[in-house]
Length: 320
Image (tube, rainbow, N blue to C red):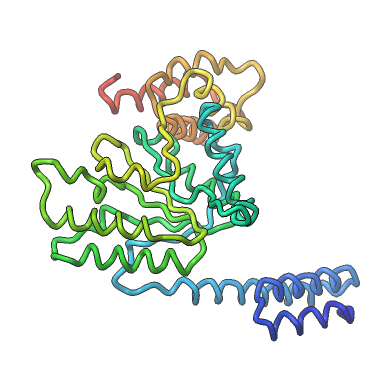
């Protein structure tokens, strides 16, 4: 039977509408019952809590139907250790996490944490993964705005959807990733620009300037040279990504192939074969090599097999 203190906590949290505190108390009751040998009851309580949490999440995430397919929500599982970046970029990410966790302390001194981040660099170098890591480490959902699908041919519709998205950002906790950001952030001075896109960019500049929630807004672009210069001052931090160097290539392979290699595996040799490839390319090649080992009944990945898949990825870019 639940303790008197647990029952009181349940009642208080219910009437004060503190749902997370209520769920925590209910799980404590489940743990107490499990210790008493009432495993069936403990399992039932936990199932009820999980179902209630899922229902609450779905209710909170009821977005306007016109945003269906434009705003995707996920619960990422990417740890900070999954980021294979240079020391300077790692420190920049660590700083964002630290400031978010200490945001109330900063507010006491009329300061705000880094909330608006621009990530720029070649495809597959870890920009989207960085957003996933930020969300995971801060225990927030990752909400991705498909910018390329946001732009429509109807005058005023794109800006209207942008307004709806920023309304959602204001009301719903999360890390918001504007992927393929240059689709709306293009330089307004370009000769091939059209009036509608200038209006969309102006709207974005106004919305992001006015946005003041605690949520993180992350914009990712493969080419910052396409972006309008007025955007840069709207971001609290701009982080540039690059293809992995030899050390980063080795570390990435060690992480991915940890269960499929031994201490004698020549990672330096494999890293040389991966020169010029992105993090995502190396990830693909390593996973293909692991699948080949599993399907061949082998316990470890062979260097020749890994080199073959790395070479295939290189050939996809014309053998660069």
